[in-house]
Amino acid sequence: MKTSKQAGIWMDYSKAFVLEVNRDVITRQVIESDFTYEEKQHSYARNEGLMHKKEQRLEGEYFKAIMKAIQNYQEVVLLGPGDAKSELFNRITSNPHFKHVRISVEPADKLTDNQLVAFVKDYFHVATPTR
Image (cartoon, rainbow, N blue to C red; front, top):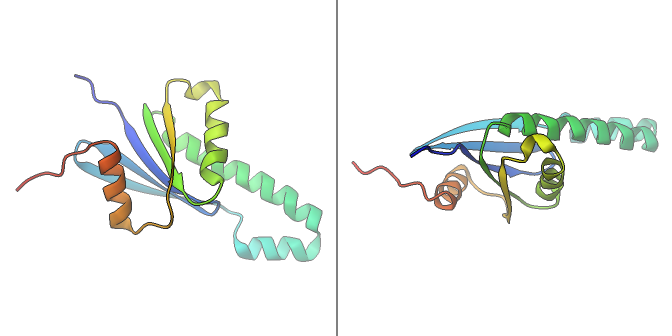
């Protein structure tokens, strides 16, 4: 039986935690947006229109980095507060390169590392190894 590559992603507009599930092992990758609070304040002080254009460009790069990280997965769950996960979902489902990826979206507030790992394991029904 072939196992599918699975990942859980907790994200907001500033950071994404990508957790790959491989049997009972979870590996973690962090992807950060370049549109930081400081960058927003700097751009806004100069020109509000410029800030919005920069935000759109950097947000697009951030979503592309996440999409690149998950392009070889068969199953992905997106979770987190706010609209970032839904926006990424819309970008993924409109991209033909991801037609083989089964994507789902789940609401979730801020989670500790342990809570995130537990959620992803439970979602993909990963058994905890016994000793």
